[in-house]
Length: 258
Image 1: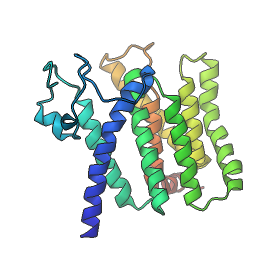
Image 2: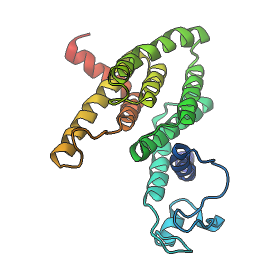
Image 3: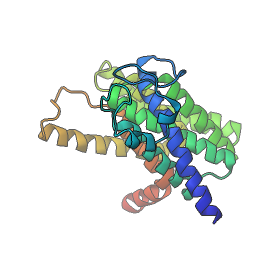
Image 4: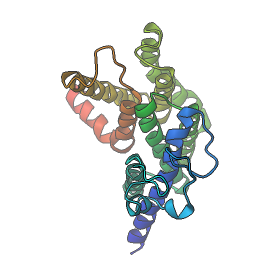
């Protein structure tokens, strides 16, 4: 009974956080403050508190603004549902070794969700999100009883090692192939995951990015010179290694024999 109650709590709590993440997704890349009540994208009217219930309000209103009747983006309920489900999965995974560990993991996945969607939508990764991801990663290491010396030596070294290939691509292409945000994000990936899991996450990002890019070219959704944001693929690789990293590393060892 307790598990059912807690699962329901994390599902609803996650959906509520998802509502806030929607604010961050659209405001941070556009240098807008996150304070103040949400407004309609079309008429600018402030949204009443009774229209801000996650998921339910969107469908009760028929997906339209109460005032101007313009159709609202399906992004809002989608992110709310997605965040709720992810929070539930984080809780059920048992990855958080303590309350602080669980808090840090929820903070990490929340930051990754915003980075994924904002980069996909605006081709921008906010420095605030990179900062929050770094802080939550640091807290997670501390909850795992990792010493300060280890964090400063091993994890920072891993950050530099994992981000080096992306930095070289960024530097040699004069920011045409990769953005500086991608460099920072891969550094945080290394800091969070360590260099082995970090490189595997990076490999997964390159492979999936190449596959999606080829599919888009074949379907004429993109031209060869079009820029496809790399942040979402880095996020996907990071999530994969956070929750299934041990299995992925075991698979690599079994294939390559190390």
